[in-house]
Image 1: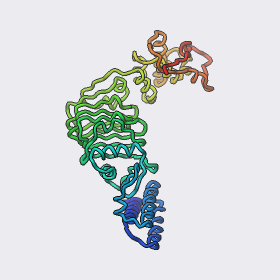
Image 2: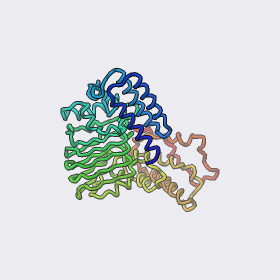
Image 3: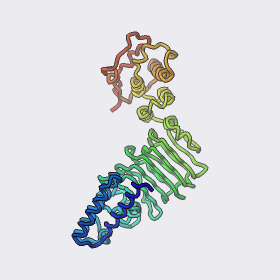
Length: 383
């Protein structure tokens, strides 16, 4: 164990011991406070730990000065949306509190008792400074799940969600928001047969669901999905995803199971076009602009995003480096599709002037491959 780890555990032990004390005289409180403040000022402690330990110290200094015992602190009834987590009291965001309250109501226990079961480890940092829950590990080993518990699940700044031993056959997470979730873990249940996923995690783990028959990815934004682990589940797994998701994500294509690839939509094609990292090559984009449901506005966006003015001085793809050759191919494919009136819808608004009126936009002196006039036309879209 290195010195910084030793400092952390030593400080943690000292602060936790102080927080559980019942009675001290004013001089003893002052002496212990000075000693603990010196520990917290150590350069070896991370600022997040300094802040958390400082919050604990301040809370329990105030408790001691009011003459409240530690047992009274643990048993007090707090006004909503406050809960005690370990040695701290947090004022949660209302959606976070309501989610815990729903589980508590279904199990006929208090919100505080439910919080203790969900957040059983007082040493884990579950909450951010502003009261948002950052990590939620929910084990339903001792809890029942109310009907449609996750149908409106919208914890505000959740980074990690782990659900284990869920007691129902269908787990629907389609209410998950895309904004903050980085890791999603579903594990250890003999009940789950059908799993509907959503959110935009970078990591997805589905483990030890031996009766799982179906996973539906269609409500999930797979644009950030960088690591997928589906293990120790049923051998007869069926995977449902949209056509564009299957084309977009190599990780989804690698999952073993019977795949049901369902038709994509115009709006979904536009969404993934604009999420795509062009450093990943142009195979996906070429597939997308050739898709019969690709919108006029989406194709025009891809065209101008590719900087067509740079390629106006080239008449043949062979004159370009390999990376530029792929962009050239994309541009010419879109031009040919426009010339044949391939794009049948104009739902997606796009104004090419945003690109060609920029100061850095400049056509080459010698133009061998001019930008067709139609590519300058604005698409109004559907409001």
